[in-house]
Image (tube, helix red, strand yellow):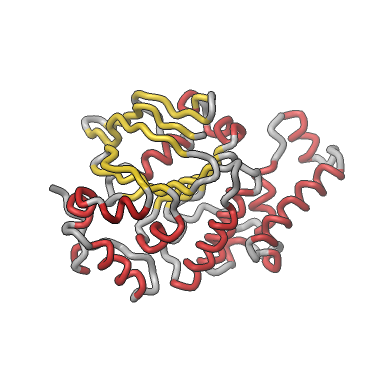
Amino acid sequence: MLRFEHVTKRFGALNAINDVTFDVEPGLITAIIGPNGAGKSTLVNMAAGSYSVTSGRILLDDIELQRLPKYRIAHAGLSRTYQNIRLFDGMSVLQNLEVVLVPPHIGTLIADSFGLASRAAAEERRARCHAVLQRLGLAPYAQRLAGSLAYGQQKLVELARAIVAEPRVLLLDEPAAGLNHGETEELKKHILELRTPGMAMVLIEHDMKLIMSISDRIIVMNRGAVLAKGTPAQIRANPEVQEAYLGHPGATDDIEAAARGRQNRVRLREGEGITWHQP
């Protein structure tokens, strides 16, 4: 289980995250929603080791992640994707997955680099990567350069890279950003298929239709603090959430209608008539 325990993050005088506490349970998809600046990605970046924690603890079972460097957080079983794609464009799709399985010990790594490691171990890694690519429909592109793929395919490669190490916690930071309707539906199918009893998933998204259709639990954030927690039905019916986040009761229906009518994800912008209300 991933646990945020009284977590606070300050950037100078700005309190980006303020005393946040919640659990992410294995076997469930936990979504975190809120406007830009609410602190969603800051939470992910702290859990993954990209940002330091000002105070509080982030626990993966009994391991305090905030005390660890990034590589040890990954070895502890936490993996993530990014809002903006971060693939190795000049490497093949297969190689992008193989780097995740690089031996963690320097002696083994050197032996592997010079071809002195067991051939069976290298073949096992490649087989594992091929299995994940097959699972996500990417097997035909295994030898293609990652940078040559279409945007939606690159998003799936990022997802494949995040799951190839079989993490205990998977953090998905706006995985549907920039995808069209068909690509979003494919992504949704893959995310649902990834749900297993042993892995906790955190989903950050602005696409409310996607959030409401696949989340088991939703955390609503406002100005760095947790405003509400509950099931999609509970969040949809919560008048405080609708008033504080969506401007007026019933606005979730407006957002989902907008999502159905657009090719890309819903971006809540003032010019579109749907705004995040900051009281």
